[in-house]
Image (cartoon, rainbow, N blue to C red; front, side):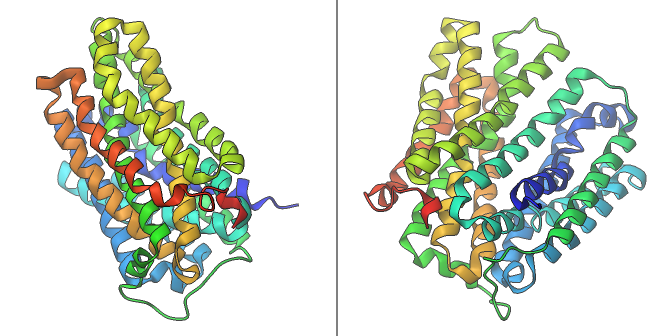
Amino acid sequence: MIRPVPLIVLAQLFGTSLWFSANGVGDALMNDWGLSPLEIGTLTASVQAGFILGTLLFAVSGLADRFAASRVFLVSTITGATANLALAWLSQDLATAALYRFLTGFALAGIYPVGMKLIVSWAPERRGEALAWLVGMLTLGTATPHLLQGLSLGIAWPWVITFASGLALLGGGLIAWLGDGPHLGRSPRLQWGGAFRAFRHRGFRAAALGYFGHMWELYAFWVLVPLFIAGLYPQATATMLSLLAFAVIGVGAIGCVAAGRVARHLGSARVAVIALATSGGFCLFYPWLADLSAGLALIALLLWGVAVIADSAQFSALASRHAPPDGVASALAIMNSIGFGLSALAIPLTTSLWQDLGAHVSWLLLPGATLGVVAMRPLLGARSAVSSEAS
C-alpha cells in the first residue's frame, strides 16, 4: 500500500538536496578555483536570489495552481538537476557557477512550495504533522554540508554535485509516479496577481506575518552558528567546529517532528507561538550565557536549534488552511518569496556586524521573533487555537 506522505517527504529531501550541494564542496571549490570564503558566499546568495525570484513568479502568475502539482515538481527537479550538473561539469569560474546556482534556486521554487501543496493534497486532516516531517528533512539538508566538511570524505567535488542531481531526478520521478492527491484544489486558468488574494484573509495574514518574523531569525541564525561555536571554542579544530555546527542545525529536524506531533493536540497556532517565543528568548539571553560558560552556551545553542525551526511547518500549515483552496501553492510561494527576501537582508546585516558585536549580534534577531509572536494573536482565540489538522 502506497503511503503518500512519507514518499513526498523523501522526494522533497531528494529535490532540495540541490539547494545545499555547493555548500558541501565549498572548500574544494576554493582550492580548485582560488576562491575566497566571500566568493563562496556569492554562490549561496545566487541560489537564494533564484529561489526568491522563482517563488515570486510562481505566486504572481498562479502557475503552480494552474497545472498539476506533480508535473510542476517533476519539471522543476529536471531543470534544477540539469543546472546543478552544469555547475559540476561546465562551469570554470565564479561568474558561470553563480549563474548555474541562480538557475538551480529558480527551479527550487517549483519544488519546495509545491511539495508543501502536495502534502496538503494528500493529508489535509494532519497537515501540521505532515509538513513538519517535510521541513525536518529540509533542516537535515541544511546541516549536511557541515557534516560532509567534518567527515572529510575526500570525494571529488563534481561527483558530489552529480550525486545530488541524481537524487533530485529520483525525487521528481517518485512524485510523477505518485501524482496529485484527491484534495488538490486547482485553478482553471492562470491568475496573475491572484496570490495576493490570500492576504485578504485575516488568518492567512496572521500566519504569513508570523512566518516573516520567523524567517528574519532562522537563516541568519543558521549562518551565525559556526561563528557562535568558534567564539565559544577558539582552539577547536575545523573538523570539530563543523561537526558541532551540524549538531546544532541538524537537531532542528527533531524539533520539527516533535512540534508536528504536539500540534495535533495543542493546535498549530499555539505550537508556532511557543516555539517562536522560546527562540526569541534565546536571542535575548544567549550573549549572557556565552559569557558565563562555553558548555552552557553550547547547550543553549542546541536548544535554540530545536526551537528556531520547530514553528516553520506550523506557519505553512496555518497559511495553507486559510488560503483560497484554488490558490494554495501561489499563496505559499508568495509567503516563501517574502520570507526568504527578509532572510537575505538579515544574513548580511548580522554577519557584517559579527566582528563588532560578537555574541550580542543575536539581539538583532530578536525583533523578528517578537513581531512574529504579536502578529499571531488573531490565531490564538479559542476557535483558532484548535488543531489545524481538524480543518
